[in-house]
Each structure stands twice: as C-alpha cells, then as structure tokens.
Image 1 (tube, helix red, strand yellow):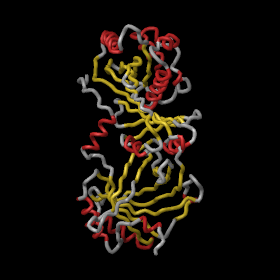
Image 2: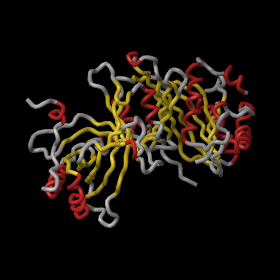
Image 3: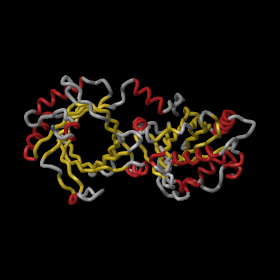
Length: 214
Length: 224
C-alpha cells in the first residue's frame, strides 16, 4: 500500500480506447514494466426516493486491488459527503435498501492491464459508462511511501516520463488539503469518483477538458 | 515477479455466485433466555466447563449498540443496527440487518432469522444519518462470550444510557436485575443440522437457564 494518483489521458478522435491502451502499454513496456494481470474498478450510483426529501446520491465502488472491500460514498445533496469502507457483504445489505435508494442505471467500469515496475504499479484503463468508452485513465502507485506530499514530485516526473505534457505540474485538486495525510485505499476511490463525475457531465470526446488541464 | 493472473471477476458476480453456492452466512439460528444476577456466577461456571475456550477463560465484551430505521413507501420500516466495542476502540464497527424471526413449528428447535453482518469503518453512524436513517434507541451491553464449536454463547447485561451518545460508566443504568443469555450460530442457508446441536447444548444448561424460542410478537401484544 502506497500513494496512488490518477491521471486522465486525452482521447484522440481517430483512435479507439483499445488502441490508446496498446500505445501506452508499449511505452511502459519500454521502461521495463511487466504486466501482472488486469484490474477492474466499478461504480454503481443510487439515488434516494423523493419521499426522503432532498435527493441524496450514493456511489458504491469495488476495486480489484482491495477485493474484500466495498467503498461507499454518500453525497447528502447539500455538499456534505460521508464515505464508508465495509466488507463485501455490504452489497447484500444494499439490496435491502432498494425501496429507499434506487439504482440510476449508470454503471461505470474502468478496466485494463496492470503493470509492475520495481516500486511502482501502473494501471491503464478504459473508462466505460454504460458500456461506452468515455476515456482513458492511468493510475500510478508508488508503494514504499504513504504520504502524498513526500512523493508527489517523483510520481509527477514518473507519469510525465511516459504520458508527456498532459500531466499537470500542480498536484491533483483532491490532494490540496491532504498533502501530509496518511494515504488510504479510500483516497484512490475518491479520486476515481472525481474523474467519473467529470466524465459523466461531459458528452462526446473530452478533448477540451483535457487540454484545459494540461 | 507474479505470474499473469486471470481477469478480476466483478464483485457483484462473485457475490451472486457465492449466494448460489450457499456459502454466504446470512441466517442466524437463535435461542434466548435470561438468569437473575444472583444466579449468573453458577451459569458462568457451568459454561466454563462446557465450552471450548477453557484455558483462556471467557472473553469479555463491552459494546454500544444503536438501532437505526428508515421509512419508505412500505409500512414496515427498514431497521439496521450498528454495534461498536467500547473496550477496543480500533475495532471495526458492525453493521447488521436482522430479518423477521421465523419460529416454525414445534419440530424446529430454534428461531431462524435472516442476518447480514458487515464490518465497517466508524463513519457508518454519520453515513446512515445522512442517508436519512433515524436512531430509534441505543443501549450498552456488557458480558461474556463463550464458544462451543460453531456455536456462540453470550451472557450479557443490558444498560440504558442516561445521556444520548454517552456510554460512560457513570451515565448508564442497568435495565433489569438479570442477564440475557443467547445461543446463536450464523450460517449459510439450509444448515438445519446445527439447530439440533443447539437444542442438545441448551438441554445441558438446564436447569440453570432455559433457552427458548422467544416469540417477539407475544411480547409486544398484551395477553388476552
């Protein structure tokens, strides 16, 4: 368990998601990384029924890196979010809540190859919203360190080394108040949620968003 | 270097297959009874002799339980319980769903009820509150836990909390002059053989305590 950051890679109009993953795979292979299986992060979103008053949104995540856990993030509609990490049976318990929280039928899946390169883990995934590829996400983890502020500069350089200028010199927004906190698996999930929210709002190819962040 | 693994199975698919294969412990077999404070030492002594954890002695526990409910379009509210250890603050919280108890006929030795037990982070209390759940009541449980094979036996005293959310010893009051005794097993569906083991074990505790199938409906309705 180390520090993980998540980065979007711009989609190009004339390339499919699979082609971009292949292109990035060649780059990380050239660095000496070895593929170690694949990864999967999924997210299902639920909304509270109108009888409960202000609409609340519940995001439920799974990550193949922590296969025994379920991550749930509740947004109460007034700007407060509360996360919970639970055992896998939490999914069964959610079924009991189906009369008060209904699925928004907008399943998100991020899947792709997982690589290891000495102290680093690299994952390159296509983000699928309702089975449509919406973009490419690259996750990089530096395993020996658990404080973002102590390894951000190195992680940034590492990512820029194979992704190029799309990696900003400014730390991701999520970490701006968490530079010295101990990193937890939930921090990875929160970053995924930030990215998913952006992709859900955007339509078509996200060229504009990607150029703005560079 | 690790070999290339197979693609990860989506979490919902592996849960579905676990349910199909009947390996999810979602049923609780239960017998309940009570003893007066004055008789508890004798029962504890007997349990020490019968149960597995002889060398280490019984495990003590000191828990705080909160009962939450949410109302939807159906008349029956959904109730969830959150339990946390007061004596081990770094332990996960337990979130629990308990279904309607099935008493069955005389041939069934124990109560059977659906139960989903999930360990969670302490944020669960805030999480449920923001989801729209309301806390109905809370209490403190203090007692002893014994094991006998797959069976769990708890002997516990229930305290009411004089100040909401404050489980400090000076602000709790015992609810009665007795201890609650529970014999339970959490198991996957269709493991009725365990109920027979429980009946035999309950027999061995007589006449110190009579463990029975307690009918909650009869407790809430006044006798005719």
